[in-house]
Length: 494
Image (cartoon, rainbow, N blue to C red):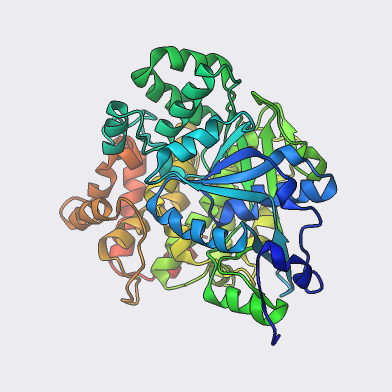
């Protein structure tokens, strides 16, 4: 398309003939939701649902203000300023069809980094009813093996001594809730949308632990007044590429500096537990239930763990994308074997869910050739992900006497991945992990101590002390380190 148009509110009408744009005026929305961590997933999921709600029936009190707490959030702030907080969502279907629409539910963005009071004041504003979070698994600041809050974090130490200058989500939340309490305002709901089992319960426990150390009276008020609903969120959202930006300009005539791509599937299950009201999201397909935990567990142990199974094994074999792994019958069969033989037996009862249908849908979603989700993205921050997605399944099967070999091979392969930092063809791997150096150092000692990698108790808990597990692990490790082709190892197991 020759004449392309820059995405902003002034150009909405010019874009209307090319793609779906908001039929409501975002300028009439008030900020009812503050969202911390405005990445691709939030924009493909929560903001999409709110956009859909506004299209169905304008709910002016439920506009979203994004909050950035990190220095690199300046990037999204700059794009939002240029584009009046608008962005394009590109839905990629397995058959190659693409659907693009402009989302208008985010109406503001505040950068707390460098000026925390701006974010605190916004959280403390009477219009704010919900503060939601996608701060990644590592942002919750707890030891994954013990579940205990990490008071050794230097940012936590600093903000406990300097409560007026917060650095972590806990410092911001306590500062804002303190201000609301002082102003006799009701508390906002704190809603985690991260891939952590019992995410609301975890957020509550961590915030209360922090607040009790900082201000015990405030902690008591939070404990009695603030709601922390558990939620289960699902939509595969790959990192935006330059090709996506170019495609939108060529096909739709829209210049968008930071669009979002995603799969067509979307799901959100929320515990109906809110302190200060909520949007009527059930009108646009969100499921409100009394207990989210069985649904959370299903998703984390099947989808998220399944992604990690494919990602780590695929990375070491040399595959670059998840759909490339799924095109290989050995990887497909191995994934299904893991889901059927190890993950499914330790799930809870799930009303209204046919697990075979759900697993079939995961295979279809992972195989979507139009998504091309990179294995490097899936493997990123594995030290935070695996203790929540994969290791609990191994632990449960150790207790029940169930199978552990499929999950254990993934951990042994992760050791090889962390040690050599290259695939089995010698090509370097892109490793994105906060614990990259610790993982590398521990894995490097494997030749002298086969269990060295497992001695990182913050990741593996006490697995190193379980004889059945270590026997399976060292057997898998021996095969992987002898440069036996990972695909052959997998094939022998299925």
